[in-house]
Each structure stands twice: as C-alpha cells, then as structure tokens.
Length: 95
Image (cartoon, rainbow, N blue to C red; front, top):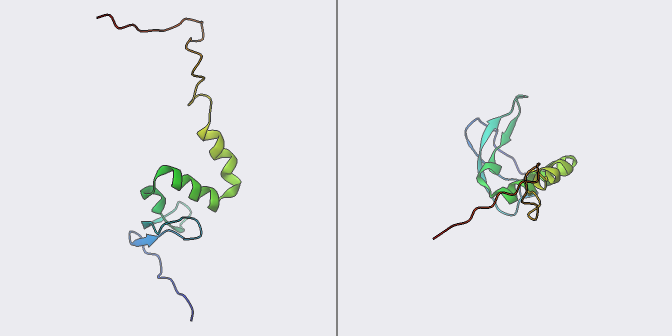
C-alpha cells in the first residue's frame, strides 16, 4: 500500500507534519516568495510549539532563535533600575 498526498492548492487545508509536531495542527497552503507551497500551520500553534517546530525543521537556525529569545534588550537585568546616566526612576503612590 502506498501513501499519496493531494496536490497543494493555494488556500486549501493542510496539516502539520507529525515528524515535527505532537498534534495534527491544520493550516492553509501558501505560496512562498520562491514559488514553492508550504503549509502555514505554525501560525495557529502556540508560540512555544511553533518555535520548536521550526527548530526541528531548520536546525541550522537554532542559534539565531536562541539569541532572539534571550536577548539582553528584551530581558534587561531586573536589578538595574537606572538609566544610562545612573538616574533612578522610582514612582511612589501617596494616599
């Protein structure tokens, strides 16, 4: 018995590849800038699962995703409350 897949058609329903994700997420076929079809199921997944799926499909990009997730600008040191001039910005509520 052989397994055959339907020919991708723009806007038609597609599903996630079970090799890359736990659940059978649905998506829609889209056409990339290079003219190839891809299933956009990742846009319907929780963000964490979507990133994991991309990492499994494109392991060479794994370092870039790690840098994006943990960049210092996005997660500044919580103990440093001063600006670049060492001015502290504290707000007090007076009742």
